[in-house]
Image (cartoon, rainbow, N blue to C red):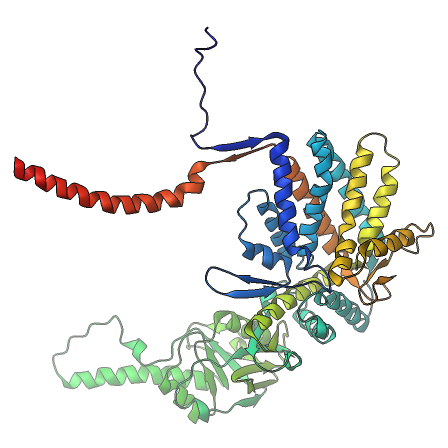
Length: 563
């Protein structure tokens, strides 16, 4: 009787959804697999693109795993982890974003039958972590260093890494053209880590091959006043003055109150204003600068004044462009025109204004410190140029990584097959359940070559069997063999120059294993009802509030009258 009268303990708010145990773990795994299925077909040189149309009506066509994951706006809490690892791979290495999502989902898929059979997820996690460590050691062992080569050799090796990255993008058809451009841009910025030192400017129109690299800075012509056309548009070895000052007449009379006793004094005040602006302009001219750039406006008076003295000026230059000009030319941005010394002026070999498509560009070439480069992209549609920019960003990141961590591995699924074979061999030396789990981890790694085949329309089973046979050769000569996308067979990825930096694979396997272990370690999901219906409630209360307010006012008046 006492037991029946026990009050029910309520811990969580009404409507809270809690799911725990095996069922919710399997449901989380299914959600991650569904996410991976979206990006699965974008992997590799024959991967398809995705067209994403968001609620604002903007259309994005992309092949980049991280971009697609960001735009998908995923709400499932476990599947969001895959979005995060794609983002981290993108910011850390730049490429391999689709790979990392596929691997994480495949590790979970392989773990699913074990979970359903009642294996404790901690056992799986332990084995996966061991397998991950072994895999990374093997990658480091197989990696080939490009250190100690001459600059020309290094350039051609880096170009091969860049073209491997670009081959799976929309601009893959022109990969050699863009690869050499990217390598030149990265080598131009030297040891500078800041990516914004490589500017990418987009000009619609023309052909992809009309894109060009400026060893210096290029930016779009800014808003200009009358007199601008009279300024010279080309200089050799000019001095460049960079300002953060407004050279306009109106700026002198703000926030001032002047009381006059005599109307004739007014003229002296107006003259003083003109003298101040002329004084500023004289100081700019006397500094010996032939190109004056300012982040703030340069008015019509100043434009005409500079034109009369054969000086080129541009106002309202974007801050990042001004910073890049400062880095390239060795100048310093001044916040005052007083006391301008030669040390703060920059210089370059050639400055010119050039027509690119229907835009005009100010181009600084042959900069002394040279730590900046600009790629001007041309192409038909806006979406196409946007995607080309994303592709180049990936290639630039890869080349930077390859320069810093100068080891490369064979691409085209070769390294994945080799690690898979190694882990399978290693698993046989282990007694106990762990053998099965490491085997399943090894099987999951085969998803990369299999997906490369599927996306290219080849028979994946056939190609994988050939690869397994090649990699199993005792001499170890089959290690660099991967999928040959052009023939549908297998080929030596090293001799075909399908290379990728070892850091890409190491990072991808690390991140994917971490994500898989994280999802496997979750045993309960609690959904707070407030977070789901907060917006709905807010809308309802707003609507209800207006309606009820009206009704109560009516009744209130009625009662008052009766009284």
